[in-house]
Image (cartoon, rainbow, N blue to C red; front, side, top):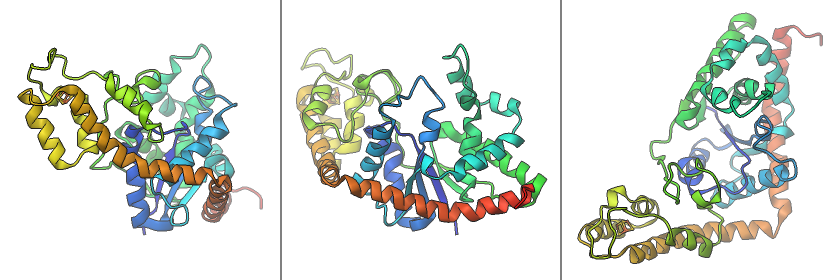
Length: 331
Ligand code: SF4
């Protein structure tokens, strides 16, 4: 039986790029794999970049990320959902992996090279990030890892670490494969500057729990086809991010209508955005209502995370025992 593992960054409120790019897939895999699907809010990873985390908000963001995942339909009683720092076995396996991973392998990671440039003095945790990621996955002997393509290089290193451990200490770990969601979409930022969440500031994102009137204010001023200057100019939906959003939120009839009417100037951009907002409202309202329900009972999320950590540790402990024995620690 396959086992799925995925780490989720505690960035607080997820945006629709996270939702359509990964979170929906977690729900689908959770229904398929049940308790053999593990989802982990990776707060230990978050602190490896001191520029990107604030101790005053880390706990709140971790909580909010769990709440958002439960609100979109991930059922913590059906899957294992937990917080990384609640399962100390991650540290232990990380240290052992760090001890067998050459510094050169870690230094050639593209994400490390990208982030290291921000620092005058590079934190070593940033370099060790992929060893911790390997520990996250292999601690559960997971073989299936739903990630974005930007994580493929880290997954390749995870396989390399598994091979190295197996070679030195005997067959222990599987070589996990990454799976890309075939339906994952590249969602443009609402400010029109590249992928959502990649450009700076809140202005580029649409949060799945963001108040609907705030979402409308962003859509209202969002750029459209730049060649469509006047209402009477025909537009090209293929170059318009509003049309990309229609493909996520609107029904097929609306998508076809916009595709046709935009090209003949039959619909204006404001009306087109209003139609989009109807789909956004229909899609996000039940998620936001569920989030509000969860907020009225804060213990629900915390209890679910505690339970998830217990379930994760029940899998992790025998693996760590096996590793300790193979590495040769005194019992
Ligand atoms: Fe974009 Fe809609 Fe305007 Fe066409 S009508 S340019 S799809 S906002």
